[in-house]
Image (cartoon, rainbow, N blue to C red; front, side, top):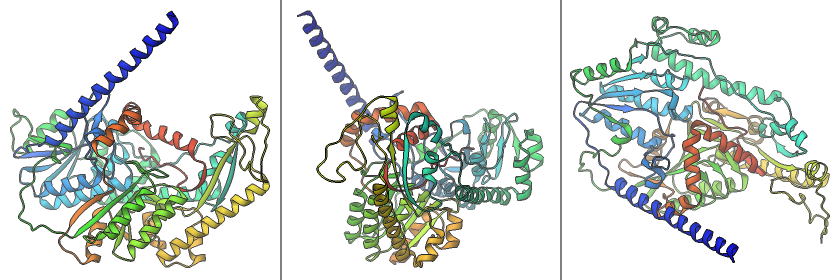
Length: 600
């Protein structure tokens, strides 16, 4: 009886705790929703717009308050999408209250995103300078390579006198798991097409293949070359001198770097604030009038008398890994429905598909490709590639009228692979687990069973099974090629020579015909309007963001864990995601063979 009462009491306490948690989150949700919907910000006169990157950079801003809650501090931490950042910079150029822009680039907590995203922001800042307003850059903790690349757009680059600048070039490190898997008794079962499709190498080899080394060397050289040339043009430093500095890998004083042209001034932060006050016409004894980029997006805009327009350009975001479920950070088959709705909407005169994806499911990629192809036959479809639009990301892009990419976008990777894991030695030899099979047909036990809560089967593929899968992958590769051939007007052998799973930068992809124009999202929208023959239009973003109620439901199930992990792990959150994806990376995939982190 005592034991019974103890369990009843524990159950009651558990239910009460859950209800309290739900109750607290409900009021947090209501408060966040109210604060979010009512937020307006006043812009001071003669102020500076401060830009710093302290939140992860996404293509799209979430209008949902739940997505902007820091669950450790219960504060609102509104993030900004790339499009909104670009819009704010453009608005600031015309805003008489804004005297200039302050790039506060303290890179220890910097979230810059990929190199292509940085370039789009850098281009917008370059355009801002035509307004005659100033751009000053400062780092109190030291510039990273990404930060310095962005900083070189400024009129003047300031730095703390004691912080170094290390330009070391770019590198890529590949980790191999084969020996560890051998010790565990796990064997990777691989079927693939494309000598450059290197996603499987870490599981079947202990060293990099010549083909993989070749492609990595090529795209790293292309990306680094773009950074060096941009710095050289902005700072007037010969490209050879920048590369020589990178080769030496030495610590130089800020005075030496000033003399070489890398910095303009070495000052402490309080001095930097005084410089900004002077630029804004404020005395040193007064507070600096400023507004953050995150707040400026909520500043009321001047009323316009422009007529209401019905013509619409639909900007459809395809962001994240391609799988079987659509979410804010993944692409699912539902995206095809979104494209179909835009195709059938008579008010939508053109579609811009913003792709930022390393690929994933070959099946889902083909489902989405079909709708892109159908839409292209009825109205202009322009693809804007972000940091990466490769493999499945290129698959869903290739049917568009025009493909726009940044020089540093990673794209191509036209290839398919299948990967499965067998744990026969682990299961039988190390754990002593044995299975017997009863089946109705010759191949009912195809792939083996899964006696452990791990993604490993009880036996390796048979020669017949491997042959069946290889033929299936070959067929998938030929289908992929046929999609690209139809969309890009390339012959089979011509395309196969540049396919084979090889990754290209946007600059190289332009030369070989996989990309049409170098540019960003704004360029893609301008091209869409021109092709549609419309001058006045409104932009509409899709897919629709989940309602607050839907977001709250997701939050109370899995969202809290993700939010807390992202906050605690910071820049390492991506690595945790990679590990999660790696354990699930089985089946037939059209995916980029790696994640690229440019925080050098």
